[in-house]
Image 1 (tube, rainbow, N blue to C red):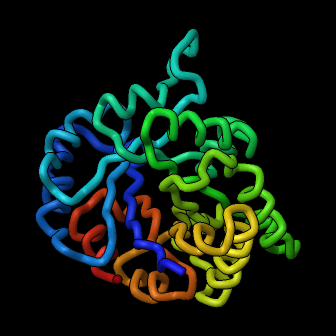
Image 2: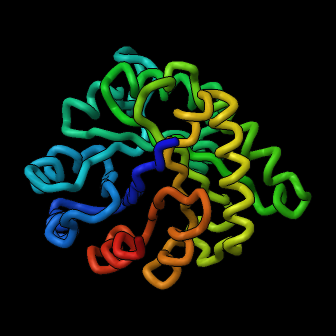
Length: 248
């Protein structure tokens, strides 16, 4: 059984500008020889500039979404191939803000994952329950169903990760308890092993996301089956993001 290589990925969401490349360079300067891979996923318009700013560093660049088609009449969308050409190496898919705000289903996320693989991008597939679902006792069934529905068979023997982001914790300052995180991550791990076998299913990183901060990063990142973090607001400032990376 191979232990997953941790991944700490920053999701800038709809934030940032060319001036923010200074923060990205500061992250790169602070990352050297640690146990985790580190990535920043800025808005698509900033990917070329960030790729140039981080050239030669250990920090990877990712996108925040892609279309499932390679090209076509999809105004305002961007394909996985376009992200790769711009300099992206990873892509976030199925984030709760896409699922809730754009009606994305598990099946659509799975199609996007296939498109990402076709373009040579590493998918970060997001799953997570709402507060109402957790209060109803449905967190595990909701999340495991999302994992099964969002991960296509084409991921077999390919690099990817799953990010557990409880919807009620994103941007709220709230976080689940460590036992709650471990319970969901263990359930996700069981599904991955069932889908892809004991070897591959055990080596896929399961990231945690949802109000990760320098003050709680170490506890979260050392919880069982937590293989990294998908970081939102705290990734916009180099000092905060590096504080999370150092939590490993």
